[in-house]
Image 1 (cartoon, rainbow, N blue to C red):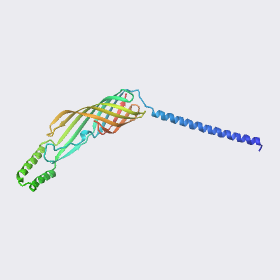
Image 2: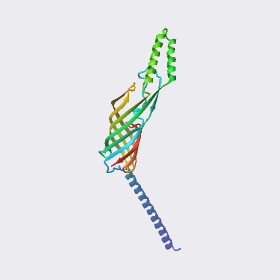
Image 3: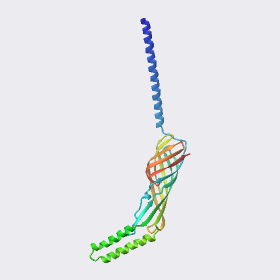
Image 4: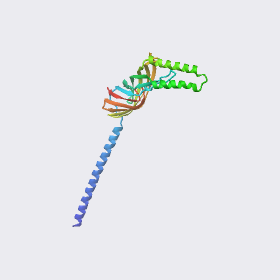
Length: 253
């Protein structure tokens, strides 16, 4: 082969390699630029043109779900107490003040039920404990009679008392919602608030009464997933009128 032809072939081959290299470099650069643009877009705070938010939800395990002592006015623990956990129901409204901050009002309703049942084994154990007074007192007769009368008084108390308490709680909470991360189909937020609670409860004799209390809301972790306006939400851990676990749906308009 003539030297000139050899140089020509090598030159064409080198040019082809340069073209292929430049083409690959262009494609790689384009992909990196697209990826950077997408990542930047993903990091951007998504803000809709809506100003209002309404929602409805339910929750479990509020402070009122903690069982209370049942023998405050009685000398002996002779009753079994059964507590029925019921979910809270709530409605709320928020108004946007800033792209990250909303202020609004939540109304939550809760109903609890406690049932009481005399336990015959506990009654027999109480009588047995009373008889043990003979073992450590020199003149036990009066002491034993006093204890038996107290036990019989407790038995009559629980027999004549209603065997269940149904208490109701109406909670109003002024809340602030702070959005930490906002995307078109996802958001991460927090809720904080305080407000009054109207308690419809029963005293130790089963008599109903109404009084005021207060509640606080500290929900440090909330998630929203869905569309631009209609979304579901879940708060897996919170100290709030709605409960330790709270979820539902919301709509922006």
